[in-house]
Image (cartoon, rainbow, N blue to C red; front, side, top):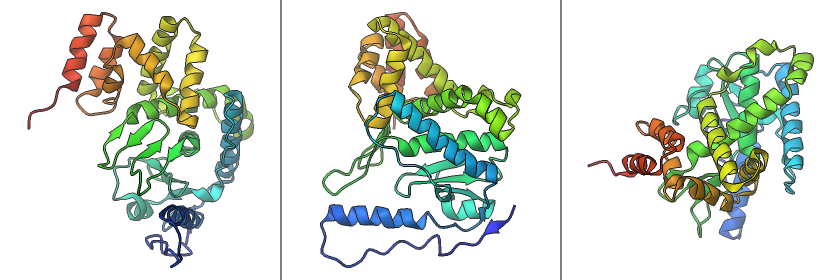
Amino acid sequence: MSEKQPTSNPEEEPKIPQIESSPEEIGKLRILQIREKYLQPLEGEIEKTPEEVRFITKANEWIEQELKELQIDTRPTRIKPEQVHILSDAGWETEAGWGNHDDAYNKAYGNTIIIHSERVQGQLERMAIILHEAIHLQSHHKFRTNEDPSYRDGYMAENQSHETSFEGFNEAVVEGLTMHLMYNHEKELESEFKIDLENLNDNLFNYRNYVDLLSLIVTDVAKKKGESMEVVRDKILRGLFSGETIHLQDIEETYGRTALQVINYLGVEGKSQKVFNFFSEKDDDKRNIIAEEILKKTSQ
């Protein structure tokens, strides 16, 4: 595979024209300019294979069909192949070395997906990553403004101090949909991309244990509410794309008033396993004890 040469300095910040505009208009213009930058090759970019380019189109189709079935009115924005950047180790260090990223991530402001070529090498693995990050980009977003410095990405919320909530839950929902779409379209993967379906298994997905927890929550909520699991699942998926969160109160009704506080700690080192224990525990008193352990402040 060959490296593409960037047409511009990837570290150069887009310049905002000196025009008389409101802060909101300038903010929108800045986002558009950042997105234009990420339509160009980045430093150390690896050329995508024809199969990867075709799969990006396929991922768009799958997501659009899912949104249609969920009766989501907003028209999805198709991810272009140019918005997916597979970088060499050196290119990754330049573009993403500053952040806490393992092998891939999406950048909502740039409407782009960044993948480390050496850490994500297998064709099927790259497909799963592309689909996962594409779902993130299609999720509900709320960008910062001068009046409201908060940020939303699906269920994940970040305040002015960059403290996040529902980050692990958000990953669980996105990964759950990723797994559903990959398994649901396995015959297409086999016929159109020559994928050996023996390699399509849960080990392919980084957040599969989060998905197990989400499945447990869906099962318990459905039982508590007297609804089908599909109905509960679809409410959660709609919230990912619409930004609605009122249905999360069903989780509190099922597990107690601390449940949504507890789920904030999914993925937090030293507390994540206790989150699993909390939602697995059927005894209310024992569950409350686990919640106290999770929510108590660490001594300074």
